[in-house]
Length: 288
Image (cartoon, rainbow, N blue to C red; front, side):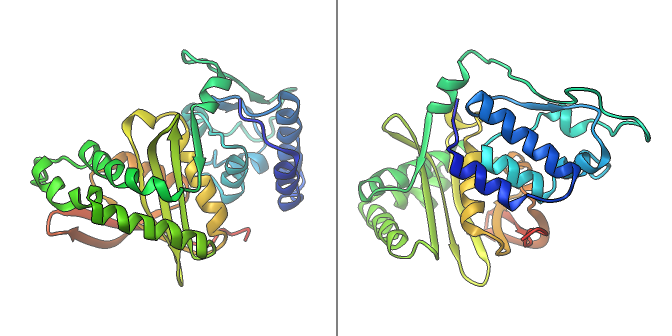
């Protein structure tokens, strides 16, 4: 189980100390998570909620989580269950019974404490430059092979293989040093599993914040690591509008970004004449 220090929790309460029932909802969760000592590494289920609270979670006809709820999940690195996201609001006039908002835990072969400790997210060190290129190449081979688009292993190695060469390592080392010098303008976090890097997320700030590259190897997916990475990135980006490129047939990535408020635009590109990408953007949060 990942325990959050009181500074993080108190900061969250200051940001969202408003809005009546919504405030009570969030403060109740904060108290519950303090009592538990952290967040259960599974899902949170909600039933029979008042409309004011349901609107925060996105349990309305639009099925869209709001910035307020995304920020709460970002603070505690947790996620809602699919069943909760698809649930319907209670009939008008109904009242939630005792314990209407419940925190549940589902064990999937490992304890929550072990699951939370499996991956460590931190800023990269200079010596990590030798690992980032190979991780990028592995991620491409796992993700982008596509017969219809004419993208095979040979093409991927031709286009991305240089990232794992001495020249590529030198470029990564230069970028890591630049991140240290300009932390307000450049962002990078790596994901470690023991001593091995299994993913990373980088970005930069200009007039808007550009997200990418972001890669997570298959063996690190489905464990909440991507959400933890995104939480750190969103905290760094703040209220600045954001944009990214995503391959249109990478549906899992598209759904992931949509959960965090990104929307596809009409802007398209064929990277190196083959890889079909679509631009996604995220406006400034309404509460910023």
